[in-house]
Length: 592
Image 1 (tube, helix red, strand yellow):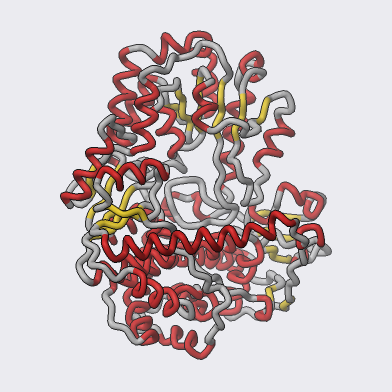
Image 2 (image 1 turned 90 degrees about the vertical axis):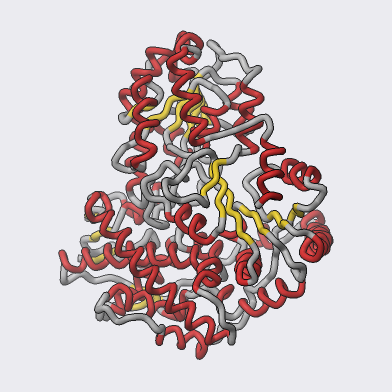
């Protein structure tokens, strides 16, 4: 039997019976490659709650061990002497992603080979291997097929299996894509000028301002309002951009990572992590580190008292170095929530990392028992929605809006959302919901899939083919404009859009699979109340029945004292907004 690990059909042997490692191999837009084949699909190991919990715990232990070892090695390689916290700020987000992704790939391969010892497969030859530039590049590559084939190939070899190898040639772009028109030739000049302007402003702020505000999950106008009200004691930072992608790979230096100073506890997976580091460790933390650090030290020479940020400390490598450098000299780091699952999901590694590295953390209303660094604060975006909702009329006309998101085909990291092949079940639940709606309602509804189909699920195409008479949103209106014109919003995911719809006071329903969207203990009572009043359903058919029940008079249902009481209690906890958010923010930032 032949084992297919990815959707790259060039690496399949179609003459044999094929065992597909997971649903990610069977791309919807490439049905012609696999329909009619003699095939089987492996069961996904993480459908078992016990296995899932064991996996995240195992990954957590390896992460802690690897972080300490990498901190020691990177200090030696770069000739510096920084704390574990310093390196956690810089490499922590990537290390979480890498360990979780690699563990998933390892267990899937291990299970397949244990159940079928005589499996054959085709690996990617090392000449086609790549090294990610930074976390953003790793996230992009690790959701696609080629880089995952690289990971599978490395794991199989380290497990002692010798498989045939084959290179992969990336297809060149069409001539029409290579040729830029005059407008595109001008854009780089404009971008260069803009970048220079932003760099100068960053340098000014880095010299004079006591509080620096990085990339926030709020509008630029709101950032400017905060800075203006503080009389620019709080200074806005533009995204720090440095090109390190052309840095020359230093193989000999990277080989030093093989001698990572970690305890040899007999954990074979930990050995796999170490053995794969030289090829997969991002350039930003190795060859590009000195370039980034030197630029940061030249630009930000002032004694900043605090740095506040939302998304920069996750994806912007120069900003992470800035935060790490300043934290070593006593600067306060203040993180701000930027995801709807924070404070709600049973397991959210992003939240765990951000709370751990910051001195204070602004939440959207929730608290952590025994953790005083988490401070509930009004979210500016939600504050605007709350203000607009006061004058909004609940409509008994207009369509039903169905909101759908999407996740990668390959597990990105373990968290309390659908992961890997479980996304197919997430989509099927939505199909079940729509199929069970009365025809008259279905004919008036709008389906709004995720705006980008970057993971290969072809969500929009699936909706179109299954429901040809249902309107698919063309995105001619923003999310807020669209929900404002609808009588009812139905959310299929327990994330930011649900919170924002609730805060906007639009009649809203949520249906989620409890096996995938696990709620943490202190949030459970709030969701039990949502279920009691009918806002939340755990099954798609029940959600469809609820829509049919309330559709003709959503005003009476949503305006009832019971619904509004539960809604207000819920958003005060998880989507807190205030008309005085600006003063609250400035006073809190300056006082801290």
